[in-house]
Amino acid sequence: MSEAVKVVDDVTFEELLANPYPVFKRVRDLGSVVKVDAANIMMVTRFDDIMAIERDPETFSSINPQSLLNTVIGPNLMRKDGEDHARERAAMDPSLRPGVVKRCWAEPMQVICDDVISQIEHKGEAELFEELAAPIAARALADILGFDGVDWQTMALWSQSLIDGSGNYSHDPEIARKAREAASGVESAVDRMLPHHRANPNPSMLSSMLQADPPQTVEQIYANIKVAIGGGLNETRDSILTLILGLLQNPDQLARVRAEPSLWGQAFEEAVRWISPIGMYPRRLTRDTEISGTLVHKGEQVGLCVGAANHDDRRFSDPDKFDVFREKKSHLAFGAGSHFCAGTWVSRALVSQIVVPMVFERLRNLRLKDPELVRVRGWVFRGPTHMPVVWDA
Amino acid sequence: MPTIRFLLADGAELAVEAQNGRTLMETALESSVPGIIAECNGSAACATCHVVLPEEIMVALGPISEHENDMLDFAEAPRESGSRLSCQVRVSDMLDNVSVRIPSA
Image (cartoon, rainbow over all chains, first blue to last red; front, side, top):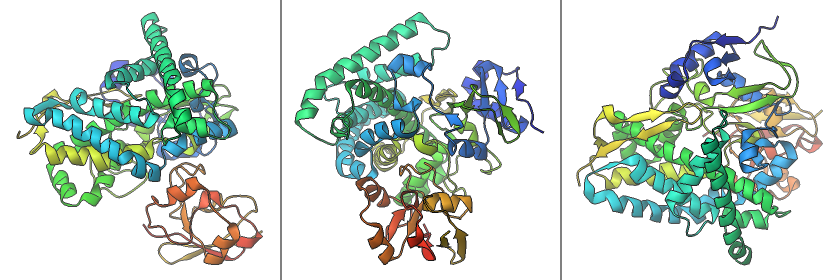
């Protein structure tokens, strides 16, 4: 006997933004698919269910031509499946493979990180969102895309405007206008850069897209570069801050990681499990089906709450705790299936091998200025939004 | 139907009936072979379905793609001369009774 989708109607949107994990737990324990009225979505929150869904893209499709994401940035690989998706993904991958990251991107990322830290090092205090994580994430992304000469503030504005536009379910005209402005800014930048990349093949994403077989059309390049800008900046920024926060709140773990640098990778995986930068993404049903006994109908959309799955106490013990040394298990912070995050290897290298080790190396005796001042917010996208710190300058 | 002999990291062997045309990764998942996680479900993006094949099978399978080659250097267990991503290897009669080792991380 299949069950109907249960409903949670007494949670506010503000509760989700402030701290979604108690809501996620309640929803996870209530059923395999639960409609949460405040978010206006049917949530799937259990680890095993999401993994199973991501192994069945024919039933749980990413294709959604009417989605806001497609309206804002054009038909893109995030809303395609199968061969169409694979071809566009393959056109980006040569810039993002782990070996390419190591050979081509590690050094420029080191330079960016050194430069940003040098600007604040003498001050003894900083707000790490604005003064460290955002500029590093934006500049690294600009390099990888092949966007020479675009400053980090512009990258950050484009990224946020595209994200806001893609989530503009209330059709706010101002948000829509900013998203259009960002989209045309990106398109003009692509137009400016393409001749250079056509004439000088290089490891950047723009160049990879031009070298792909078959080469990507300008429309495909516009759309997928916008995906990379919307999806490649905030997540890196947020995971830098989350890893620093987890370690600052747990000095014993920080000491062990610093004493044994091979643990940085493990510390990073725990950080993105603990506060996953992307907490939810949608899939659409192509037929009536059951998800662990709950019936969902063709055409309906479910929100895969990977942020919830990463706190599923069926899989992770004491899941709300940051614990670098917990029993090793795979998480869903990078998603799963064919849409597995294309930037995974860049973020692993940049955040866990370059930025955060350098932060603790250079900002001596780094500590939170006041734990009460730290702000962490969001549920679809979640991360520290304000993090004042002090160190011995 | 070829039989694939998965050699687990703890030394145990798990013999599995496989279907030609499926990938080794899919075959492993269907029998819940420990150590094959396959987060990206066959897209060669996550390097969590690493296996080690015998030398003669490596030769017979022919060259691997640049993408897979790059990924294999970053799998959790160190790369060996017989390393492959099991999602990129299709089952055929050639693999009948072949030992497919899951390297320990």
